[in-house]
Length: 366
Image 1 (cartoon, one colour):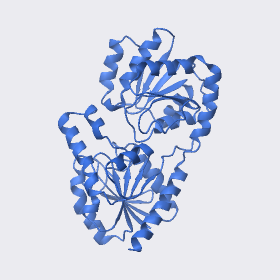
Image 2 (image 1 turned 120 degrees about the vertical axis):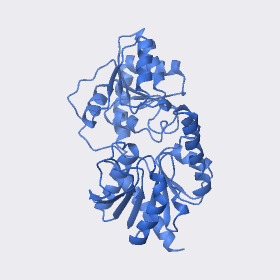
Image 3 (image 1 turned 30 degrees about the vertical axis):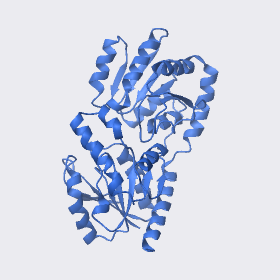
Image 4 (image 1 turned 45 degrees about the vertical axis):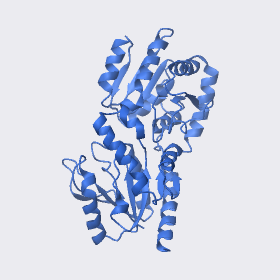
């Protein structure tokens, strides 16, 4: 197949995140299987407008701030000169509305819909812009089949009136050596991920402050983002010692997973709880808010706990249970490794390839 992917940026862009990880891990495997992948994305400073990278044929236009306005013309130009069988419209915050500009088969790839949660993240003006753009999906993508990275995201799409099939293809986790020499720290509680307002990391800080009144624990917030100054200020205000690591590389992140007793994910909404799966793959139980995306990442009462979002008393009790009960912790740890082993990029690539073949056959038969 000749596949054209439209995404905000490539995996080498300084602003790359989970969507770009998904892009690289899945489509690089499809390239190895003999498919041709063309990527249309924005251009960061120092990047070339055209290059072939790891088998991807990459065309870059515009900047991150205005790339969506360049897509219609760039898409038409590419389709005039490139033999394309199917287009992957990788939706992330602001859609590209590609079904408006081509009669080619389009498959939507949806990671995460903010919906009303966007108003927790940014100012009212920009939040309204994102909210309106997302809601236009119901108008311009109603007849477009979709791939979602979780059942929660699929449910959001269904609620918006998408009529065509919505397939769920879970993200994978990297193949790395998970038997480390790191010593498990029995009192270390960790949050791992981007520091964004909608992720409600202040609940983690407040829970740590409460637990520290009763137990000698250590706490760590791993990651970076625009909510970091607020979280550091809150930690000082509550007089709670939390280590803020900032951004860490993959190796350091895996070391932290291996050392932690419990990983906490308190977000109001996620596309998919990738860091929760990663933590479990190192045998670390996870306490998650019972939120879309996160509730699919653990097995409640077996590999971790779900608690009602925002219920900090329940969050505290779940963490304490895993701190104090060694027999239960060991059982959760063993089950967590087994559960996480099911999530692989090879499986994700195979499933997406099957969907793409089906979609192109259906389109050819019209």
